[in-house]
Image (tube, rainbow, N blue to C red; front, side):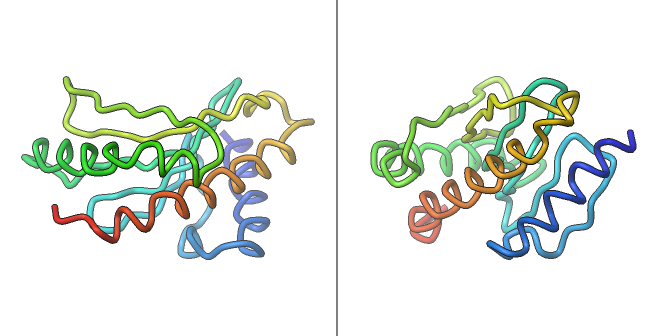
Amino acid sequence: SNSKYRFWNQLLEKEKTKTNLHSGISPQVSDWIGTRESGLQWNMVIGKRDARVELYIDRGKGAKSENKAIFDALYANKSEVESAFGEMLDWQRMDDRQACRIAKRITKGGLQDEDKWEQIQDALIDAMMRLEKALRPHIDKLQV
């Protein structure tokens, strides 16, 4: 829907002033936007009533064991990552699926709450920047 496009367009305009993590991305009519690097995707997701940021780990077809190994290597540093992030994260190994994710839910509202878009966008950008900063040193050390 048009509202998704408008939501991401506003968010990306704001985000540019703070980080270039999603600088190559155009707004789209989608529930999520993300940027990819070697099988790791930094996503922002908007739902009707809530939103989230996540590191989505998926190196593609046949990479399930590799994905789980990456997740496990990052999970081994959980306390350090969460301390750098500033709050607890949702560590989803998703054993029944190929991918894994490390996420943070934003509970300020969602797409249906247009009067709260500003706050939701600010919260998403802030959480995304903290997530990337908290995980980056550990991603850089990955041997997988």
